[in-house]
Length: 216
Image (cartoon, rainbow, N blue to C red; front, side, top):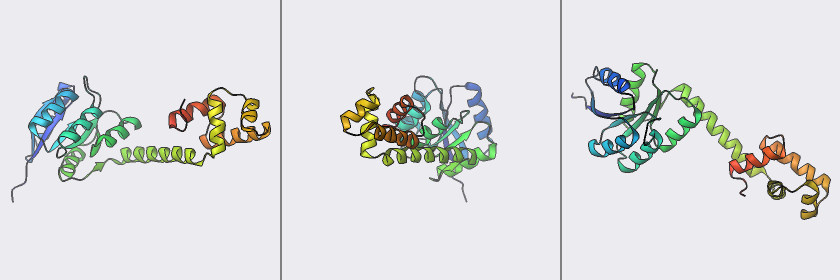
């Protein structure tokens, strides 16, 4: 039975990396490298032109980075499955890459068999995330869940106190504005610190702004 050839596009700004991948992938009869791109902009153009089955995408590239390229390719050529192949294992890169639409995330020091398995998997519409990457994703989702829980758990009164803190109101001013005692204000602030996992007013305001709990 004939094995379907998987057509692959390489996107990496380092020529030596592309040459090494071409040599490695050339050892597998069912793989065919149909094109190369030296940056994200070129990757998007060649994805539209060549319509590859699989794209191996680096993240840090000039002109257009990998995450933006993935976003554009998923929109223009959804049948092309994308594998992130990078040296970066930073949680933020992993999350952004997967969120943009990549189906697999591998580090460049991964064994050849892992790369080949990922190419075959995504070409069949499956996803493949290495255990070390999966653990980082799980950690990130748990962190996001905690942040959401923190926002949801703030009471209406605590949100009022937080907003007044954000504009620089002192405890006495908050108490007067909300018609509550100074002691009650301190209790609300202590609860806010605990729920946001912070230790002072500046940190509480900064964290709440970052999470979108309040806006200035």
